[in-house]
Amino acid sequence: MIFYALLALLAVNLAAFAAFGWDKHCARTGRWRVPEGTLLWLAFLGGTPGAFAGRALFRHKTRKQPFVGRLWAVAALQAAGGAAAGWHFFLR
Image (cartoon, rainbow, N blue to C red; front, side, top):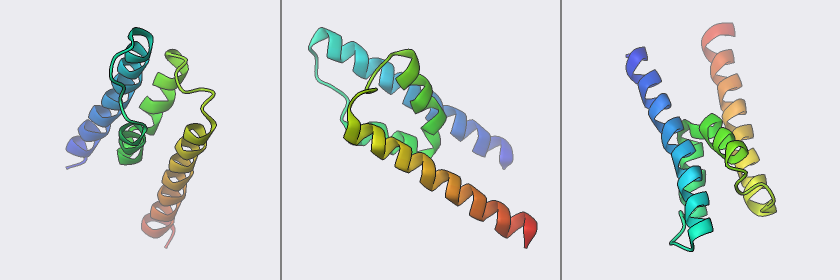
């Protein structure tokens, strides 16, 4: 069970990373872009590390302030959820 959860997390992180790279490529070549909502949903589904890595490596969406704030909000929600889950399962 844990193996499949980790496999799913790896997959969503790779998808988020690839989506940032593809969106940067599309931005440079004038193609249809990946919607910001899709990028944020991939992060929300557990791909936050992949999203931040793709953002840094491809230097993409680093200055779009509303997007950056939303991505950090997703990361904060995940951290709070992880802390609450940790408290519930391990310290209670």
